[in-house]
Amino acid sequence: MFESFLENIGNYKQVGVVSHVRPDGDCTGSQIALCRWLRSRGIEARAFNDDELPDNLIWLQKSVVVEKPSASDYSECDLIILVDGNAPHRFGLLGDWLKEHDTPLWMIDHHPDPEDRFELSISQTDASSTAEMIFNLFMEDDPNLIDEETAKALYTGIITDTGSLQFESVTPATVEAVAELLRRGQFRPNEVIERIYSNRTPEQLRLLSRALHTIELHADNQLSVMTVTREMLSETGASPADCDGFVSYPLNMAGIKAAFLLKDFYDDGIRISLRSRSSLDVNQIARNFGGGGHKKAAGAWHSGPPETTVKELVGAAITQLKAGE
Image (cartoon, rainbow, N blue to C red; front, top):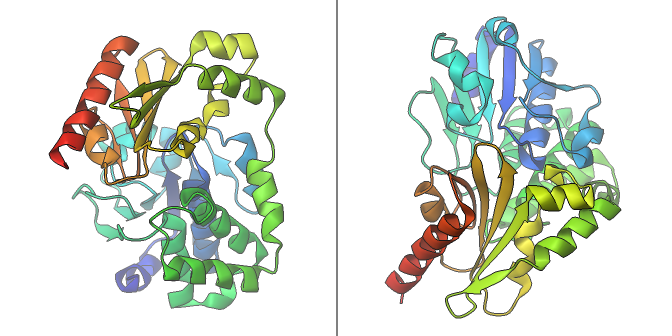
């Protein structure tokens, strides 16, 4: 998979590794591990993201620190690599910067339908995560480069993007990758899990309680809609990042086929998280609203108001449910 990557990476000296805005465990773990691999090759590699890391991922920054980029930072790069995303406009400042610059652009990603503007595109849609793909880069090149720091970064990426190995995207190769990371990294997996998940604050739990009370069920209790508003954040003292993962809670209800979380606290509209535990393709629904992702997990945006958002979102899901009957 990485033959062309390995053949050509030596032509570059200063590489920017960029992850998508609103960073998660997969994009962060992947870019940290990739930067460490590049540095092992004598390449100056820097990690960039327009947004700050969530609190539960800050600990991953040791030898690699994820920086907020400027235009001048990108201008210093002779190669830019996108990880865990295949559309530059979803990478913040970089999308606009690329409109005026022709710096070579590569991509490593597991999402479907990549744009065709990349000089090198490494796409594997059946991979559980981008971190699993970066793991394969190490295995193809030199497995001995996987030390504790790299192993923890890749393990974080795989675990967070697979629901702790619960999602349909998990394959025998995924589980084998995790086993190899544990062998080579020599760390206790429960310690990483606790850093990622066992850090709930009182504010976050109060917000969760409020959010659960907003659940609306549609289509004979097959669809769930949950909402978090600006007022709820203010009243609980929580932050926007505190509602990460809320969308998955309704999926525990019997009969639910898909769950939607409306984040109604941004100035430019409503951001939507979509999750499915059935044949319902939420990526297809998200694309109707200028978003995308995977069949089981996606994100989208709507201009509002909330009532219209819910009507159109649920309508699109019901149309797909009926088509599958």
